[in-house]
Each structure stands twice: as structure tokens, then as C-alpha cells.
Image (tube, rainbow, N blue to C red):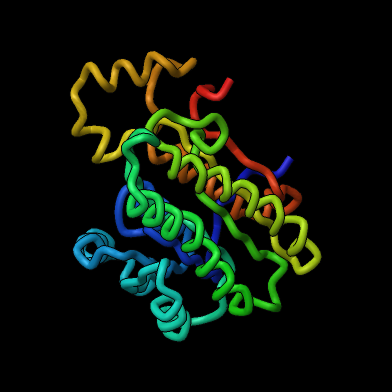
Length: 249
């Protein structure tokens, strides 16, 4: 039996929203595994911080400020790519949480535009930029467990994350013959800088809802992403991997 070997030497990955949070861990993981990464992020501050943090990988990583909701911004970033793409991780996303009764048109439109239309803009724009000589073409979309079971106060966010799953399954059917695998990851409660700022009792309440009785780590999401990007996952497509400690059970 072959051992898992996450070696992405010679591969170029694009990670949207890759300068902070889960996205930053995804970026770091591909770099540690020898890959080259182009980080697309809306926040210039986050890009500046990521560039400082990843200084030792300067020869492997480039940073571009990109607004995934803006097709002109995406097109400009595509023109600046250093080479053909092997892996795309659609991670960029936002929340604007309110109960449906209080949700505004602005709240709805902002989340739909970033989380759903943004994935379309990026994937559509990059489709012809994948390495035509490669049988290792990977698209990984970051969904959420709320796209599977809904969540109070997140009608907009849950709708986009459910849409991401439908988008993933459809592209898997359409693009398999072209050498692509297309999969989604649905994170549950994951510890990030944002959750670490929450009161202890809130975090304990969140953990109590999880069968494993703890929050996940960003490494858990990165490990799933690396696996789906690897050669060992070459026969996995159209699936949704819930990395959630069992909360969807």
C-alpha cells in the first residue's frame, strides 16, 4: 500500500482568500509541500501580513489583490499569473449574519456576490488557464456545514454554501472528461483568530454540540484539501467532505 505523500513540486495552486484564516493555512500547507502558490485576497493589509509571514517561501509564492466579485479585477489577476494552473481552491467568502426578518438587500447581495458569483467568476476565468498537459487538474470549493443543514441568522450564507455544493457536483460531471476532479469541503466549527476572540462560555457551547466535543483546527481543513489535491485522490470527484467532528450527524 502506497503511503500518502503530499508533494506538490512543479504544481501551481491558486488560493482565493488565501492571506488570512483558513485560507492562510491552506497557502502555507501547499508551500510546505513544495508547491507554488498564487494568493488572491481582497484585503491588502492581509496580503502584506501574509507576505511577511511567508518570507522564507518568497521564491514559491506571489500575492495579488483581487476582488472576486469584480470580473475586471479577476481578469487582471489572471493576466499576471506566473504560469499554467494545476490547483484552484475557492476559499474566499464573507458573512453578513442577521435573521431573515432583519436581513437587508445589501446583506443578501454582498454574500451572494462574494460567496457564489465570486466562485463562478474565478473558476470561469481560470478554466482555460489550467495546465492542458496535466491530468492533475483540481478544483476544491470551500463550502460549510450550514450549506448542508442551515443555520439561524444565516439565510444568505447558507444559501451560498448550498449553492457551492450544487456547483461542485455539476462541474464534476461536466469536467471529468477534461481531466478535472472537482470537490467541496464543508468545515464545521473551526478555531480561527475570530473564534479565539469569543467568550470562553460561547466556545464551550459550540464544542458541546459536536460529537467529538471540541472545535476543529485549521490543520484539519488543510489536510483534507491537500488530500483532495493529491494524486492519491485522483478517483474522487463530485464529493463533499464534511470536516466537522460529526456535527451534521
